[in-house]
Amino acid sequence: MQAPFYLEKINNNPRFYADFIGRVPGVPVDTDRDATVERLSPAHRQFVEAAGYTWQDLHRAEQIHGGDIAVITKENQGDAGQTWQGVDGLITAEEDILLGIYVADCGAVYLSDSVKGVVALLHSGKKGTEVNITGRAIAIMVEQFGSNPADIVAALAPCIRPPAYEVDFADTIKNQLLTAGVEQGNFTDSDVCTSLDTEHSYSYRMEKGATGRMLALLGMRGDSQ
Picture 1 (cartoon, one colour):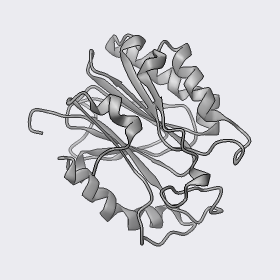
Picture 2 (picture 1 turned 180 degrees about the horizontal axis):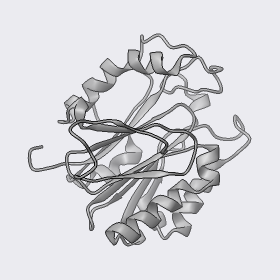
Picture 3 (picture 1 turned 120 degrees about the horizontal axis):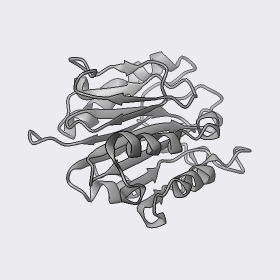
Picture 4 (picture 1 turned 90 degrees about the horizontal axis):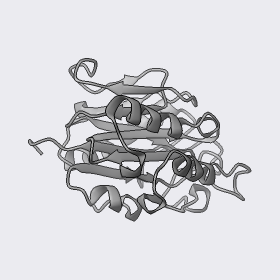
C-alpha cells in the first residue's frame, strides 16, 4: 500500500521508509490498551514485513507522555526489537532499525536528515508538546550527529485538533519545528483531525478510551533492502 501523502517528502528519498497505519477494520477494540495492541499486531506485522523489515527490527517507545528520548545505536540495540522504557521518542543513525510509535489522538512527529543519515520518531501529545519533545529531538540530532536543522524533513501524522480538543498542539508542534530551524517547505502536516475521521483513525477522546492504536513507522534502509 502507498504511504500517506504527508510522508511523501520523506519517502522521496529511497534511503528512508516512512508509513502510518491507521484504523484496521474488523479488529475488536476496548479500554485495555495492551490487549488491543496485541490484537492489532498481526495486521501491523504485515505492514512491517511488506516494507522489507522483520518484526524484530521494530523498536517502540514505552510512551509515558514525557519528553525523554532514546538514541538507538549498534551497541545498545540488542539482538531484537524492543520497547524502550520511560521514553516518548526514538532516534537512530543505524540502518535496518525500524522506529515505531503508537497513537490514538496524540501526534506522531517524523524527522529525517538525509545528509547525516539520522531519523527520529516522536510521540507528542499535549504533555509531550508542552515539554517540546520535538525541539529536544532536533537538539540531539544537531549535538550528537551534526545535523543542520535546515536539512531535516519533518511530518506530522493525524492527531486531534480544535474544536474537538481544547489544546492546539498540532500548531505548537509546527512552531517548535520552525523555531528549531526546520524550513517551512520541509514540513508537511496531515491536517487530519482524528476525531473527525474515525472511519480511518482511532480517537481516544471520541471513543471514550475504547479504541485501538495507529502505528507510525520510520527507518533507514540498508543494503539488504
